[in-house]
Length: 397
Length: 152
Image 1: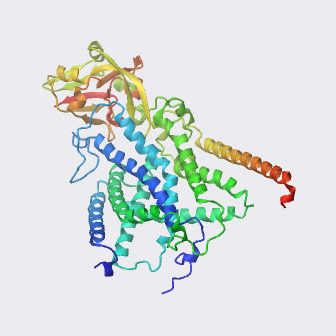
Image 2 (image 1 turned 90 degrees about the vertical axis):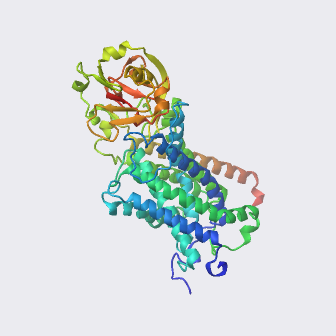
Image 3 (image 1 turned 180 degrees about the vertical axis):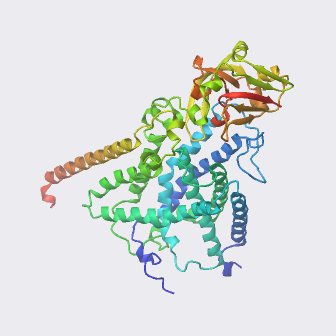
């Protein structure tokens, strides 16, 4: 049966660049990128330690990603989350080029050639649908832009699961074709195949130049973005990043947005310390305990990081003070009246790490109100939003 | 089976497993706590691919077709800066076009930088760079042509 006029006909597609070989090259470059993004995405989910306290943000029956997230090395979460966000952004041009290279197949005629083809197309719908969904929601979240009516964290997690499953199957299905393309890369150019235009236009761009174009797009995204994660002089060229130039010590959420007022953290502030009993500590009493200073990175799920010198009381000293020297968990509660992150729980390894602090000072001065005055949690390699600010209670269990 | 189905048994098993897994994930995803408006989530899941395949890709292809009417040696000097600037806009349009939630400035603690101005400056810079490369190439080309007049 002859296809209807339009994109269903092979002659509709005129670009001389499309071929299985081009798609193979683009796929081979894109694959390591999406694997990094997928793996670091799963690690980010694990870093929130959903099995502890009320940390879990994804309603689920099964969570296979429960591990005790380590407190060492201190830059672990900064590295994994920066990779997740930065690589995810940088490979956008590759993803676009890859999708462009196979677009004629979307309109292939007949739409379903048989049960095998039908299943494959359903699998591709899941792959492309989840890929676009993951990239769009993730990139929007990094800009605090939420033009939807669903829970981002849970939807992005579930979308990621579908994407990873569909990707694994896609790579397994396409591996033979990729191998064939690599083996016969010179001969393949002469063989007619579904991606090659039967009536190509005069080329205005060579395949090599197309790869340069994709690389230029990826490079421009990298230069204007990566500095918010890497810091140093690169931060000053991160012109389009949400926390780029001039933001050497960004605030994720100001006291004003969190509805924490100066009156709430005034002279009447007390820390409620719960363990083997209950005690209230004043700021002076906390400052009278042994103080320790560490330079530690704090990394946001949106991709930016910053390293500062934090000073405060060790969490393990506070656990001892609460009468639970070998506490298995610590739930920190904030003065913040609302919001998913007004409390967070850390595990035994994190409490025991000597660099885990209830910080009272940063860079030698008392914490600014927007950074959590009078006291905030700082635990190495912990996602930024779990480093609870404006702490009012610590529950050791 | 291979003759009628077109692939081996692993192909069908793999695809059935993927579809079953995706169905389970979607059932989790569409619970009320995640998606209080299920239609909105459904739209987002389907619309992304549709918008890319049927709007974005045809739009930039059409743009490229217009561009190909330029003199052959100039096409890529327009195409490169436009494509790079376009992909920057695609990724950062919420910031560049100030699609910000009302609490954004309060969350940040200060006024955000002028992202639109920065993007325009980057676009202008790329265009200027490309124009310089074009001019140098043309100059070299005409000098080379002048050096060998007999070649014509």
